[in-house]
Amino acid sequence: MEKILVIGTGGTIACKKDESIHLDSPFKIVEKYEKTNVEFECASPFFVLSENMSLELWKKLLDFIGEIDFSKYKGVIILHGSDSLSFTSALVGNAFYDKPIVFVASDKPLEEVGANGFDNFNRAVEEILKGIDTVYVSYGNFTVAEENPVKDGFEFSPKKILVIPAYVGANYDCYNLDGVDAVLHMMYHSATAPPQVKNFVEKCQNLSVPFYFVTDNSVAGYESAKDFHNIIFNTTIESEYAKLLLKK
Picture 1 (cartoon, rainbow, N blue to C red):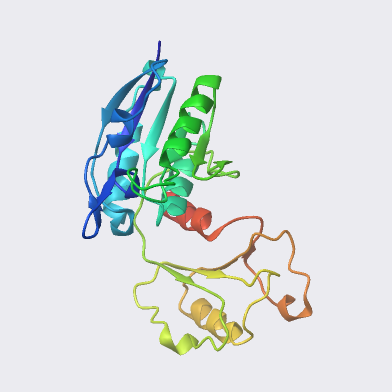
Picture 2 (cartoon, one colour):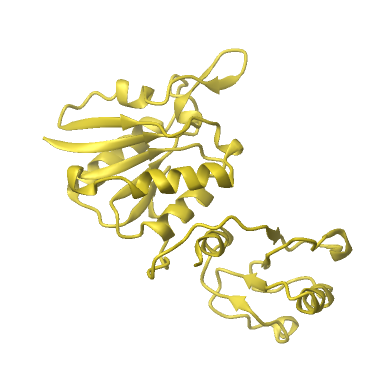
């Protein structure tokens, strides 16, 4: 019988609903799992709602995964809340890109009608038993957590990273750069950004604060973006945020 390690970090998949939705039990999904073709081992380095995730907890999770003897398991399932799921999975996908890990979340507490946690967990188990060799997310669908991971090793170093969305009427005077280690600026869907960002980029350069545009496009073809530099293409803000934290 194959063995799977289940890491419970909290989130809706571990919640119950009465007067409000709140944490209940880290491994209730395992307790309710009906198939017997796999043995589960459970561990919980911390237990929080995912909106309460922090850099300190991320370090604890990375340290915990780093101590796992993967030869003992067919794979690892990490139970996580959906709010910060994309950020944590990008972090782990970069740091442990060659490990069989699947993140699983639920859109509702498991007792709620229509909760997708059971389907997500079952899919994760099935895919692990088939054999996977990288980090995935099972939440409504089954997707690779990080397609372009850091492959030359990592060292988690908490940094003060300012993430700025692209929005109409952006006022860059509102952003204080004191103590900021780097700026990640999201772009509009066509790889453009508000024109007033150019003055802010110059301000960052004068203060020696690294500045990067981030887009999932492969090119910035519009005239309005022709003077933009330091564009990271074909990526997500979650991935680039993780890579800055993992850089040696």
